[in-house]
Image (cartoon, rainbow, N blue to C red; front, side):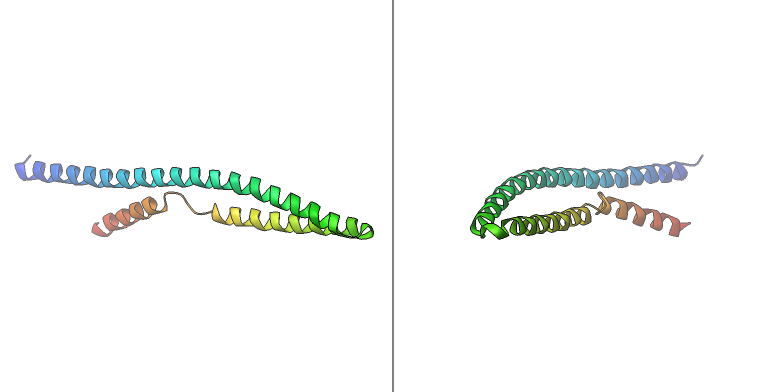
Length: 121
């Protein structure tokens, strides 16, 4: 085995290890960002839900009490439908926002690396 071939193989392994380290660093950064974002989203969601429920509850009671006695049932039913529509809208928003692929940047980089390696063949 020639010395040049061994050197080339060592360089290839070194380059592959460097590439793998770079990709793992990127993945690690993305995981950290994802976890921080998740914690903040969970805290904000709980606070928003609690405060929103209190506000809507007190507001609904105030509207029902302010309505004439013969319309209170209709006002309560209308408010219930309004709250249901709002709940469906926000459920749709959450579903839409959670369909983003985690680790998209890492996957894109790996796909780019694979395409570059296939182009050399």
